[in-house]
Amino acid sequence: MTASTSGGGALSAKAAAALEEGIGLVFGRWTALQMAVENQWGGRDSRAKADQLAASILSWFSSKGEHCYNDLVDMMYDVVSESFNADFEDGSIEEVAKHLLTMHEECLQRNYSSVEKLRNSRVQGNAVSQSRKMVVDGDDDSSDDDEDDDDEPSMVDNEAGSVEKMMVDEPKPSKPVPDADGWTVVPPRRGPGRN
Image (cartoon, helix red, strand yellow):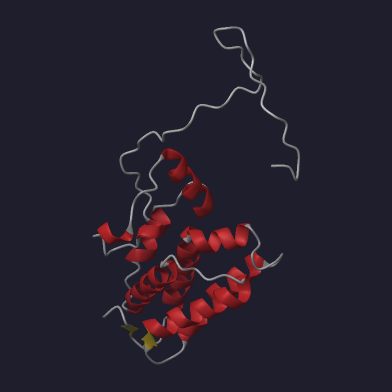
């Protein structure tokens, strides 16, 4: 299989169930989508919209014929744009689409290793909290360019690299502190609307 198409065979009931679970697991780790849901970018029914996207993708994979990468990416961009009023320009849609096509191809061959791998590597919390945790830990300088692992997209990797402490300015004291001469510099008050 190439990254651009997936076979057009019919999914067995077991393969369809595995693919459905895999789509749910991938979506649960998809940070951009989870942020859209958590922050209700699509309104109060953002969770239902994400679930509908997953159901639409499963239905698309269940149809006969070739499943083209570009068609899946276009469908995902359209739904994200219409449902969440957002454009995910972080490359995650392409990454998710590639992963889903690979998973579909494996399910057609009754190989559920991708789904098993996702199932066994459950993350603590959700994708958004993991994203925040990684930034707090200081591991936010990675890029997709240095990703050599083709087995699993980086959005589902949960490996922490070397953790470095972030440089943070010391908090400013809330009360004026006298200097060595005994003088106290009082900052001007700045209320709302003042510079």
